[in-house]
Amino acid sequence: MKIALFAAVEEEVSQIKEMVHLTGIGRESATTAMLEFMRKHEGEDFTVLNIGTAGAHTAPVGSLLRITEIVSGGADFLSQPMFTDRLPVEIHDTSDAKLFSSDCFVSPSVYSADFLSKISKKADCFDMESSALYTVAKHFGKPYVSYKIVSDHLDVDLATWHQRVHDLSGNLCDFVLKILEKIKTNGSLELI
Image (spheres, rainbow, N blue to C red):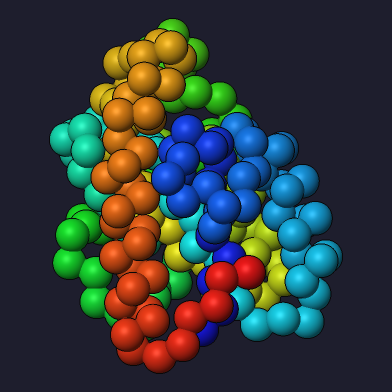
């Protein structure tokens, strides 16, 4: 099985950074990075595995989430679900979650309390890249899988988020290595 690992920033995956393609923060950066990668690997069969951090309103900080569905921020985000794929191995350390992907940091300083309440009823966690990565992967016919580690409860500023990402990076990297080892045990594994 061929896997292409993607994360937004090096801080999220510092211990395995040589294995990961970095997109930068936000949907525009993620789109650009994915399009460039897909053009380089056109015609190859592989699965896109997106890993990183996400804010959440109820899951404890440090929880590992398997993203099952993505809703994209925008005028009609609630009616455009994107269903993710699964890896061919059992992963027991996660909870399933629906993710809201936005163009900006999801927090009370950016969104109104009313909007946060509305999306909190439709999504379990929040990031800024997943909808773009998913859309490009699916456009090129690639399976898309995503796992996130909860970094905050929509209650931190950017500086605190960076510190949390640094603190959680080891847990996320250990989890990813465990996934890759399970895939390798069940057959072959090639990272591209």
